[in-house]
Every structure is written in structure tokens, then in C-alpha cells.
Length: 479
Image (cartoon, rainbow, N blue to C red; front, side, top):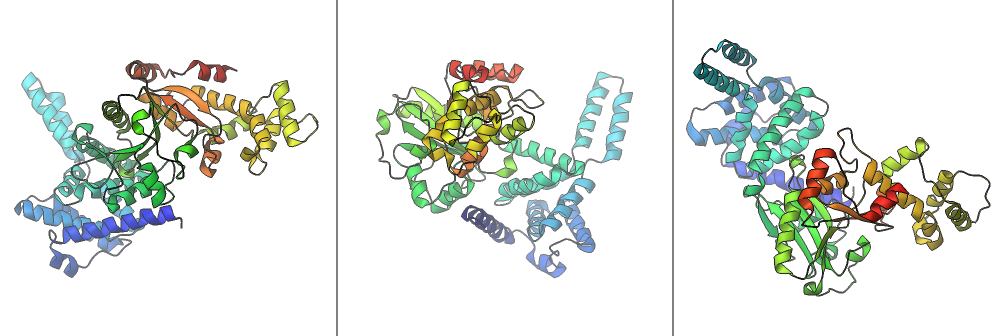
């Protein structure tokens, strides 16, 4: 188990303990223990008990206190289950607590028979009410509990992989996503700067949730929160100690071309007031249960606004981003004969760097042989020999590889293009870490956020999938 995995699991364990403790005062603990907590895998007889718990939770009798107690008891039952038990719990919820189909059919019939405008409005209202699944009312019970919203976010994180394989669970997931999207509207969120003085529990979460450049130690984290760095996160009022998404920013002179320099703990701090460029070098979604609910575009724009006011000298706002999909696309390109192509001089350079005679080996095989050399990126001759053909391929991937809906295949490119950025510059060996080499052969890209162009770029991409790029990027992709 890696340290990162261990940290993430310890946070999950702590969350579960906190939930059980927080809900004890609300649940009828005597009834809970006398009736017997469900066995972890939720066999048939226990499943029947859970179904009754769900029915009890939907009852309105007893007032708000009783409703909260029933929700807490149901939640504690869920938390006592293992992966198999939770799958059965969610399947039960999806299959038996959806919309009342008889009521929906009756409402449709009334709508079809409606003659007057007033009858039609009443029938449409009845149909809308009939289409609301019972699970929605049950799930919303948890919002009145301490940590209840966090519980639902984590429940959806567990639901997501199951929903990809089950249409019934997909409907439950889609409805829960709709609920969460309403509850986590950006207008309800708070932007906060995170500093080294933040509570240790929150700093520990930054380490666990960092998804782009792993935080190696507390000293690494301290460096990322230094005076010439900024970290901002969105928080929800019901999850005040849980970042939803956070961005790490370096205040530097000029557009950065490599992440190692930004993460160098031995580098001295610089005066942030003298910086002319803000580099967004890591954006991490912290809550898997909020997948599909976008905060990133709002976060970047808000942070740009904050930084502009704090540092008037800042003129450039750009990212230093990974290209996570390039590695898999590159492997596919080789299989179909669209791998690296070399000019005559480039071919001579690769052969010389490898110490080989030209025996007619294909361009692609030559480049692959160079990339197979152990630590090739540390050999200046080898790295320089494969630079041009690999950068051409990366530019072509970024600008032309599309998904079925016409959007950029690369997920990071899609994110920034959707936000109105433009592809500005490819950086050779911008990230020679093991992950960077595996994902993108060490390359990174700067996406430029030019405030006067953001709206036009966003519209061009959203309407027709047009990629806005610098002349240098366009030339690389064409060559």
C-alpha cells in the first residue's frame, strides 16, 4: 500500500467514525442494537430488514426528531456494510423505491384526456409529482443530519462504478447527481485561501486529495504554501472542513516550462509582488462523489480576480498542465502506422544518438528504440533527437484528437478549452517524473487565460469544438 493510499484510507476511516459518532444521538440506538445490526454482506433476511428501515424512514409520523432518528439509523446500517452489502443496499433502493409506475401511468392518462388549459396544468403537475422517485425523499432526509451531505457525496462516490454496469443504479446515480448539483451550486460555495497555518486535518486532506503532482512530504506541502505560492479551494457550508476542489498557483516571472522548478523545495522564495505571471500548476477535484458537477471554471476565474486585486503587476495567467491522454493515444497511433515521422536530418540525429548505422529501420521503430533506453530523458543527445517528432505528435493529438461528441479527447484540454483558455505552448520534458513520462512522454502544455478572449474562446469551443491555439501550436500540429 502506498503512503497516498494509506492516507486516503485513514481519512475515510475517520469520516466513518465521525458519522457513526455524530449520528448516535439522533438514532434510536436501543432499537438499532436490539434488532441486530445487519451482517456486512446483507444477506436476504437482513435485506428485508433494510427495506423496512427504508419504509420507516419515508414515514412522516413522529415529527422532525423522529424523522432524523430514522435517517440516522438507516445511515448507520449502511456504514456497517461491506462492498457487497452496500451494492445490495443501493440496488434495493434503486429497484423498489423509484417512481410509482402505476401512478405515472394514471397521470399520463389524465394528461392525455385533459381538455381545458386548467385541466392540463393540473395534469402536468400531477405527472411531475408522480415522476419524483421515492428514493429522492429518502436521500434528502440525510441533509438534516450532521455530516449528512458529506455522507451523500461519499455514497455517490461508491455508487458511480456500480452505475456504469447497471441501468437501475444509473437512474439512481443521475437523480442523486441532480440533487447534489442543486445543493452545490457555485453561488452557495465559499472561496478560501489555504495557508500553512490552516488546521492540520485540512492540510492532511490536501496531501490525500492532490491528484496532479503527488505531495511527497509535509515540507513539500509547506513549499507549495510559501509566500510566492497560493492555494485556493471551494468549500460548502455543510462541509466546512472538506475542500471540494483546489488549485495551486505559483507567482513567477515569465511563463513556466517545467514543473520540477516549481516544486523544488530548495529554491529560494521570491517576492510575489515582483511577479508578472500566475501559473496554475495543479487543479484537483477532492470529492469523487461530485464527479460531473463542474466547479473548475468558476474557481479559475474567481482566483484570477482575487490575484489581480492582490498583485496588480500580474499580466499573464496561464497553466502548466499535464497531457494525460497522450500516452494511450500514442500507443494507438503506432498500432495503425501513424507513429513518429522523421526528416532526414532528424533520422541522422536519432541514429547518431543511438550509435547505429542506418539499416532501413522505420522512423517509428527508431524513435521507440530511443525511448526504450533507460533514463533516455537524462541523455541530452537522445532527448534532443526525439524532441521534434514527439512534439509534433503531441500537438496533433491535442488539436485534432476528438471524442465522439466533437470535444477534445484529452480530458485536461477539454477542461481548459471549455473554460475559454487557448493552447499556448508545448514544453518538452516539462515533467520528467515517472507519471509524466508514462502519460505524456514528459511533455506539458501552457494554457493561456487571456481575459479579453475567454468568452469568445469558450463559445467557439462549446458551439463547434473549435480549438483556440497559438500560431506556434498550430504550426506544430500541421508540420
